[in-house]
Image (tube, rainbow, N blue to C red):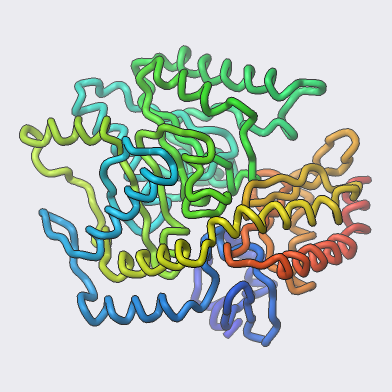
Length: 461
């Protein structure tokens, strides 16, 4: 199987040279929060796949829902006013969840896709469409943020603010501008308070709008908590002040909730956690817990009214995907949301997440190469430093955190080394127990102990 993999598969986000030398890590099965590789080794999954397996692995209810959906109506599309019950009910349910759990009653319509990347591509296009229909075609630039991750289609990769995703791809385009990354621990000045740092971020945003011209900026996109960037939590008051700047200049707010949506932070949505009032919301991952590829772009009354008013003149909205609103995916999403609600998984994330965070802090907080340990709910990051006392990071090329993550696998723990900063993320399924968390902390501590001599050598270099 390993040789067949090397000779047939083109892996995403993988070094071809390293893969040809080291080979694949082949998974064979999973149940609950446990993975099993093809050699029979069991691992505790604290990655949730790619932040996405919210209800855990191997749920028979999902298989039953998929089987019924396939037998009832395995496919139909939503083009040209075609519809089906599964997508109708899912759209209504998503809106109700956002109305009730995020106080976002201004959100009015749901457009379905298959990935967070294509949902952000949809939102990128909608910013332009909205501007053109309003008669302000120049107002199409989007402000993203350094460290932000919004996907890897051409438009979504341009929105993404991580340079490694642009290198050799001739990205980003000139219609996207990147503001500063809101991470006080790494980018705050010596002695700078959280309030002063927030002032500086807002001044940076206002300067960008002034430089580009308010009449050219159509939207601002942000993850409530940056995921791939390093589990980066914004300073207090940040989003309230951002919203005020956007309102002042008639700029749309896009909340990328691909990771933070559906319970990961201990609340249903990051929109509710931070009191956001977005004009568009990007959803994926947790909507099906990765049992089927489904995404959603949720749009506000403000945007919908413009689209609706212009419809007689402009005709059909010429955008969509073959698998938009796939009936099997919609049925799986409904079953997934039933499990999240009926088993209180959002509440479990709110309770068990802080327990895991405090366990990591207690066990690792004094380590000379562990900087900040932070998180909300079951979205946690451990940042590594060459010199903790001086807040001096490892050189990016040293890949210090990847070394620790590799040792974690050897100790039976799956975590993820992130690509922007030297951070390892913990994002286990929302059904994880406190006993599982104790086990995870113990395994990670042993992995760090194994890694420490090499970390010490890298820091000295």
